[in-house]
Length: 110
Length: 145
Image 1 (cartoon, chains in turn brown, blue):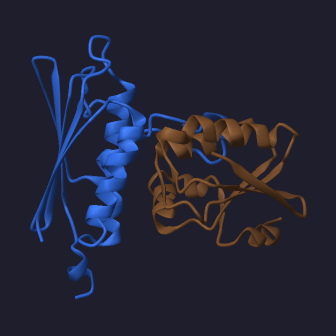
Image 2: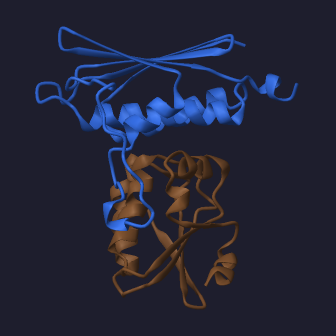
C-alpha cells in the first residue's frame, strides 16, 4: 500500500490508497506511517475518506504512529466513513485523536 | 431473505480479508448499516485472532466459518485447530487519552467481539476450537419502517 502526501500549512496530510485498513495491510501501513514521520513531523492528518473499513490492527498502526510522534505532536483523522467512525467510538479512540470532517478543518483546531 | 454461507479457507490474513469482503457484499443489501458493521467487525477480529494464534502443530489447518442469518438473528460459527481460545478471560484495554504511551496498539479484538455481539460461546474438544457468535440484527427493510 502507499500513502499519498501533501502539506496543508504546517500539517502533513496522508491519504492511504487502501479501502480496507485491516490486519492484512497493517504492518505495511505502520511502516509507511513511520516513514512519513521520520522527518520529525509534528502535525499529521490521516485522510481516511477512502477507507471503507478499519479493524483493530489498522487502528493499532495509527495509535503506534501517534506514540512515535513528538510528545506534543498532533494526529488528526479526517473524513472517517461511518464504519471507521464507529470503530473509533467503540474503542474510545475518538477521545484520543482529533476527528474532523475534512483535512482543512484541522486548521481551525490549531 | 434468510442466508446461509460456509467458508473453508486457508489460515492466512488474505483469506480473512476475502471472507470479510464477501460477507459484506452478501449482507449489505439485507442488514442495516449498524448491524452490518457489528458482524463484519466480529468476524474480522475473530478470524484475525485465529490466524495469529495458530498452534505449532496446525500451521496450515483450514479456517472454517459458517454464517446463518435467519429472521432477525445471525449466528457465526468458527472452527479451527488453533491454540486454546477462552474469550471470557480477557483484559479490556484501557484508553487514557492523556497518557498516549500507554494506549493499546493491539489486543483490542476480544473487546470488540464482546461489544458487538450479544453472545460469545466457546467450546474446545479434541484440540478443536468452536466459537459461536450470536447477534440480533436489524434488517434493512426494518430500519426504514
